[in-house]
Image (cartoon, rainbow, N blue to C red; front, side):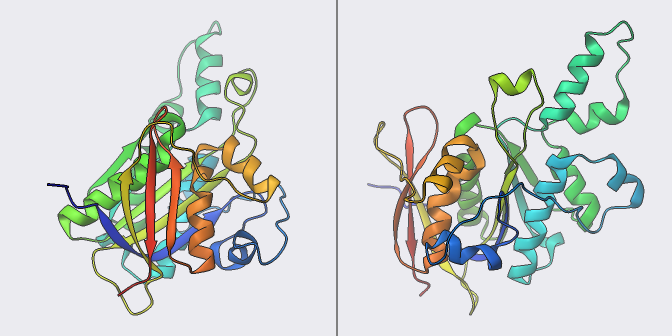
Amino acid sequence: MTAPMPSAYVQGIGLIGPGLTDWQSSARALAGEEAYSPRATTVPTPEGLPPAERRRIGTTVKLALGVAQQAVAAAGLDPGELLAVFSSSSGDGHICHEICETLASADRQLSPTRFHNSVHNAAAGYWSLATGSMAASTALCAYDGSFAAGLLEALVLVTVERLPVLLSAYETTYPEPLRAKRPVPDSFGMALVLTPTPAPDARARLAARLCDPGAPADRLADPRLEALRTAVPAARSLPLLRLLARGEPGEVVLDYIGEQRMAVQVRECR
């Protein structure tokens, strides 16, 4: 007997990346209806954090919370009631660099602020501070398959718990010399609010399944978007975002872990 595929309805989308300010202004370029014009990512400071916390956070937390707040606002839901999944391939590279510099120096005392911002669930903690949420959150990492892993986790949570779930997937750059080993060219983040039942303005129904190992992942016709997809783990979401931007049913195959792939069905809401 085949197990049912985990599924959910897309209620809100957030997006920040090179030349991508938010979902509303970027959807036509993702759908191929107008030219995509990449430019350096601008990451706003998220709302809701106390002034002291806003001064302490780096780009990674700003990005994770920025796309999450976009998606929740679009969904029209209370952020304090959402389960949350935060997914990133490697966390905050700049803070990792600063810690490495400190450990390699004569004075090896680490700043407590740097330390608590270096942990992989830092964005989840700041999300609870910004929103007052007491709901459960998950922070996960699956290297270049982190977006698909995060999406699968979020879909399973919606299916099992029958509660709305926020997914925030994000990546930021590294300074040298770490950049030589992890050459992420720019910051990119996306977020989805997924619900167990469709609201009147739900965008689509998603369902996921694992593919045979070695199945080819979907590529993008625009070479600049394709370069972004292959260079930034969170941007592996772009084929799915393209289908959502077009408002069309279909199926996309996404990179997952190693040679494994994940197929995501996009269906109209019923």
